[in-house]
Length: 184
Image 1 (cartoon, rainbow, N blue to C red):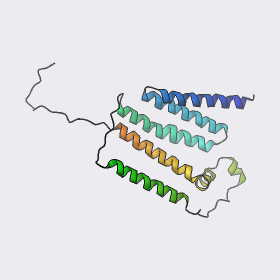
Image 2 (cartoon, one colour):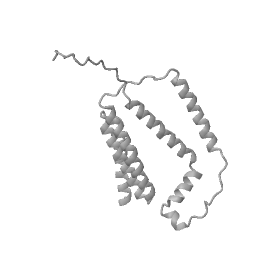
Image 3 (tube, helix red, strand yellow):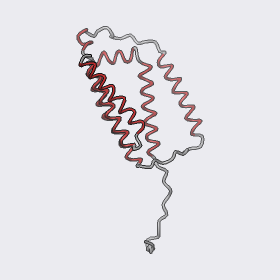
Image 4 (cartoon, helix red, strand yellow):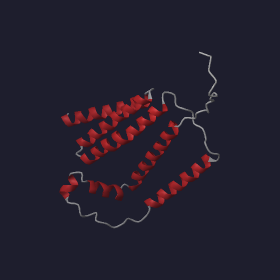
């Protein structure tokens, strides 16, 4: 076996192990930190494939911004997450209707005829270096549907995280200003 294959198998083992540990972690903070390790491992896999742009995006966007957001939400939730409840009457049917409208809009957007552009103006040297322009053209020409599905998935995850972070607090009863509590 070559050194590259051994290194790849090690990275794959670390990625799978951290993903499984994240799923089975009892503490939400540990799960988020394991997810950061998983994202960093995937970034190193991108580096081994000479996809430096994707590795940088993986670190900056996922391991950086999104994981900080998740960690912040987990810290807000505390050790005992609050149960879910329905805030508005008719919230579920409205959510289903808006979800269907989103799916119809995504299907419509994906089936729009391709816009002609300057897709052929990338030099072969730039194509081999992980050019962001080529990545963007490929992403929005060949992989529009997976890109849109990923963006919707991240939006749903963010809405779910905010929903879970909100606690249902009961109104507190305040004492009059002159009353002194005698209980200890």
